[in-house]
Image 1 (cartoon, rainbow, N blue to C red):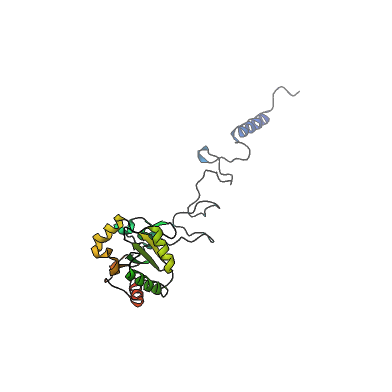
Image 2: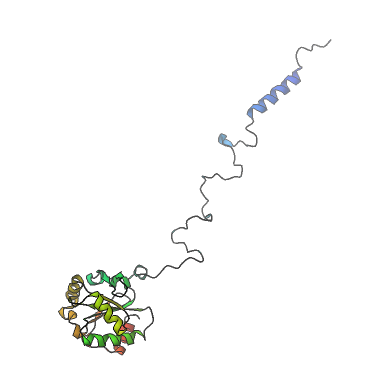
Length: 232
C-alpha cells in the first residue's frame, strides 16, 4: 500500500525549482542586465541628451552662427555690420533732423560715403554749393551717399532751417550744429570750417577715412569725383 502523506522526491524537486525561478524573475516586460539596471525598452528618456550631430527638434533655438531659416528677414545693413566705426566727437554727437524730428548721429551712417557741409541760411555761397551737391547726388548710386548739412549760425534755428530746405527743394539731413559739434569741428579742422561763405566740406569714405576738401565752391563734377574716390 502506497504512502500518500508526502510527495515523491522528483515532484518535490520540481516544485522547488519552479519557486526559485519565480523569485528571480523581474517585473513583467523588463529584462535584467549586468549591474541590476533594467535594459532600455526602446523609448528614450525625456531627460536624455540628444546624440551628437542629431538634428534639433522643431521649434528649438538655432545654434549661434546657424543660417537663418528660409523666409526670415535679412539682417539690415548697419555700421556694426560694415565694421566701420566713427569715434570723433562731431560724429558721435546727437543731431536733430529738422525735417523729420529724428535724432541721429553722423556716425550712424558709417560704411557709406558721407558728404558733410557747414552753412548758414543767409549764405548765398552755401546755397549755390548745395545746388551742385544735389546735382551730384542725382548722378551717384542711390543709397550709397548721405548728405548732411549743419547750420553753424547760432542765431538760426531748426524751424527756419527746415523752411529753407523746403523752399529750395534740397534733399539731405539738415540739422543745427550745437556748441559741442561746432567746437569739435574747429578742433579737428580749424576756425575756417565754421565760416559758411568759404563752403567748408568733409567727405567721409566707406572705410571711415575723413577728408577735408579745399575751401571754395566745388562743382557737381568735382563732388561726384570725390564721392567715387571715397567708395560711392
